[in-house]
Length: 417
Image (cartoon, rainbow, N blue to C red; front, side, top):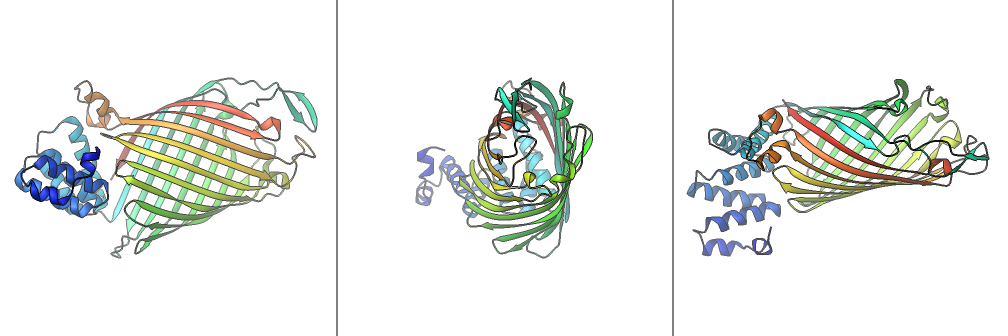
């Protein structure tokens, strides 16, 4: 949005009532600033004057959806479904129609499925150092950094049931799964899943979400970890632009011996993550979020117990027509409680890790629009994401120093019922 557009005032609209382009720019400005009621009023006036202006009607439907006026949004979208639209417009109409009609139902099911390839420069996280420790003895590092490619897929299914309280309270069941199959290094194969079940209850601008948690992890087809526990999240909408959250999750971790790890139950114990953060949306198309957590991990053997902090900063920029740019920086700093005799009987492990990630995503139909092509809806609404990341760990145990570059190409299909 240009500086001139940002400075439009309502007085200017009154002085130029026949300047419909100015009125539309004003409505978009108000929506970007979170003033949805003003935007809706301006758009409604435009449609009274120009009922065939489909771009305005589509934007009006989106504003009504954000105002939680599902009946109004469906009404406008049904009008648009009878019109001659571009492929991109039709894709947006159908997407918002599904969202609006689903949200009106007391029970809603939605989710997504992702699949694609990832290539890593150091998938087995081989150490950087030429010399590593084995039971206090320096030995040559013979673990090679061999690049590898993997097939990656993940899925999510979420069911929400409205309690009909008038506040928007609902119960939910959320299941997620991840599968990674390396082409060369089987020991990096994993299958993991996470299940959360609970409810979200609204008290004015505050949302309270208690939940139960289960996590499971299989490494190279060996059952490796079970986690059972629960959590509590508090979210507070300060304004249309700022939201705060606080969260605590506590799980009991139960480890198993595998062909890759003989440690097993020595790692067993409670893990607690407690912290929070905020998200800030200065304009409609950009959101910045920051979160930080304190971690306390207990274990039956002290060398596997640790505490520390981790945090993440994210920035999401919407580029139009479903295209986006996501940047993330995640940091971890963990101190262990006692030396691990596998490496050293005197050095207590201290790790610092960072991961930087940049992702660009767009619907396939948006790409097809560049060539004036129209894809079938089942293919056109697939999202393609290309991302790259860099992971680095610095530890006082040289065995655990590593870096890895990664690139992913992923397709995502979203669904709702």
